[in-house]
Image: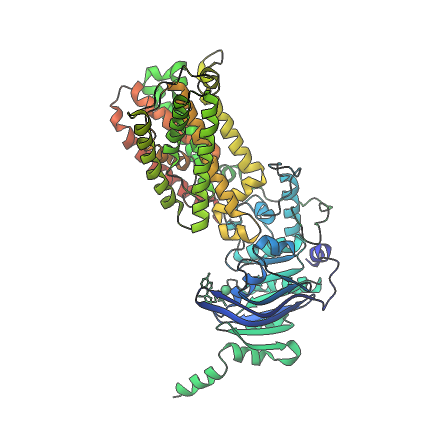
Length: 271
Length: 353
Ligand SMILES: Nc1ncnc2c1ncn2[C@@H]1O[C@H](COP(=O)(O)OP(=O)(O)O)[C@@H](O)[C@H]1O
Ligand SMILES: [Mg+2]
């Protein structure tokens, strides 16, 4: 599966160069302040893990980078230039691809149509130019095989694939279209152990191919397997921000489980 | 614009993928949205063919096809709109609005009929645009937005006609310039050699073909299905969901305009109360043809089969000598059956295999 990545990953990527920089970023939904004061740098060839409990603001954070909601405070820079994305298209045009936890695919559409959705191959560039269906079927089929995703038929609705396979199709699609920054929102949340393993391997492969990866999860074990940098969010604020060398799995686990609060709770519940 | 990100996808992979288990023919055919409607159309045709001798003649077939086309033309647009995840309850009265506008403008100012044709087209497109814009802008379900448009237009149709003509119908427009020319396009009889059909039947087939091609063979079609199937995912991969939906509403009102022009040039005068209730027939045709009410699934050919079932039944009941009052009951039963069959088919298609 690394072939696909090496083949399609952007060639101008040099490990360690900052691709996305968020500075003092925040987002309010009307009166609800979902996120505030976030500093996050995504470097090429590194995995930045964002951890946090449900409602911590993880999805909100990545929706800013992927252009689904614009930020209301602070600045976001891509390749050193300040941006303010008004739509996912703008973010995609900067090479930022997102695989959402809940909205990765359109279940009743065929696998190949899902693979190419939004980036269809056409036999011309005039309006209503016909699709090059044969090419799209072949490419989608070949790319998925390279990733080890076995679909019976590329024409079957993607809803017939397992959760892990759908997630992998969405990731393969992002990489195939030359993403430089790959954002994964809780890609392993709904998956079993084996399927999670596949997604984690693929995440590591994307990193090794030089992509900047933002990996969202509430599972510190998964994060620690692939992460270079860890940020823990709690109620929209950053409560931990450390490099891999500065933190152990135990610390992450404790912090995720509630840290001090947990100690207090265990004291309270003592029998 | 396919991939404006840094790296372009490289050329097609060298080795063709090894053969895979093709899904069986049965499962591929059953995965088509229109199978249920096709089966029903065959059964209903055979039924009336058996019990109603007048139904067996070619002129009867021409009548059935004509009745089907007056529903089917708008139903194509409604089916695409439903695949795109929205409803239009104002389509039936929009037909009347365009016919009335065209007739009254030309009659009052003694204009060439073509002026009316063009002006009413603009009116139709504005109605479609407003419907679509309000839906995508406010996020209010299209059911409610177009229900409002339905009432507004119904009132306008009656009120304005009364104001302008003093009655509930337009004057006869058949002596105006350009009438005969426009009639040739919208309402002529076309001899096919073995039978003569209304030109709307041919237009209907053209619109169904265009709708099918659009849906299955173009990027726009992909975007329509995705917008209805999962609008948030579609938007996330860069599909302009709002533009797609506004376009679909305008497509419906364009087809409503086309039917409005047919009615005007076929009958020369227009009743202001016409068209109410037809919006449901269009929706029924689309649903019987396999469109899901929740969007993301359906077909243009299916809507044509739905309209054909409608045409066969309205005429078949007459040919069989039954009381036509039962027609609505039949329609209700058909709809219920269609919805249940479609649910079964959808579950079958989406099953893990
Ligand atoms: N569209 C929205 N409108 C209003 N509030 C929202 C919206 N999306 C998220 N929120 C709120 O923002 C907070 C963070 O949500 P989210 O980013 O989805 O958390 P996570 O992904 O970490 O579970 C929650 O309190 C949630 O209720
Ligand atoms: Mg979330």
